[in-house]
Structure formats: C-alpha cells, structure tokens
Length: 124
Image 1 (cartoon, rainbow, N blue to C red):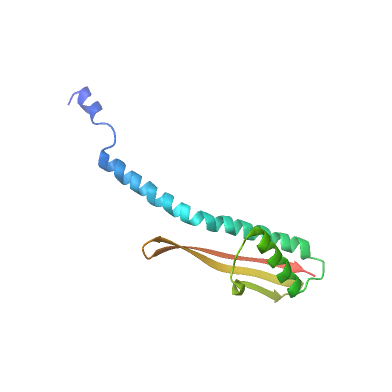
Image 2: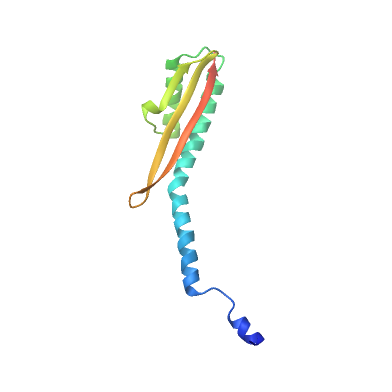
C-alpha cells in the first residue's frame, strides 16, 4: 500500500456519522427532558434552606412552617403534592422533609424519573 492510499482512507463514514449523531441526539433529548426537574430541585433546596434560616430560633409551629412554605412556593411557582411534605416534631424543634418523584415521558412508554428527598431541622 502506498502512502497516498492510506491518507485517502482516513475519516468517518456516513454511517458512522449517523450513528454518532443519533447517540448524541438521544442523550441531548434526555437532558432537555430532565433539566426542568433539576431547576425545580434547586429552587426547592433554596426554599427549604431559607425557611430553616428564617424560622429557626423563632418558636415555629407546624402551621407557621406550612404558611411560610406555601408563601415561598407561590413566589417561586413551585407545585408539589401536599403529601410530599412532612413536618414532624424532633428533639430540638421540627423536622421538615420534602420527598417526591418527578417523571417525564421519554420515548413511548419509557419514562425518566428524578427523585427528590431533602430534610431540614427547624429549631425552636
């Protein structure tokens, strides 16, 4: 084989390019579907940390915690099911736990699921 023949065989074939483009497209589509969930999770983290900071040490009650959460959810346009939110009494105050799953249809009956579970302690 001469040097000129080797040089002409370098590169990607059209089929190889299509397969690579398909793989990149599948991953990009999944990222587009899941990104809003991560943005919502970041907002939820901020809300929980703000509620913890604002109510800790101020003798909070479960009602005041729920009110503060509802107010912040409204401002941040966060919508979660009521049963995803649990307030329980702890040794030093209250434990606030938010736990839910978000699902997005991916292809046909295949779904992408993002689980969220965070807990903060609000002291008296």
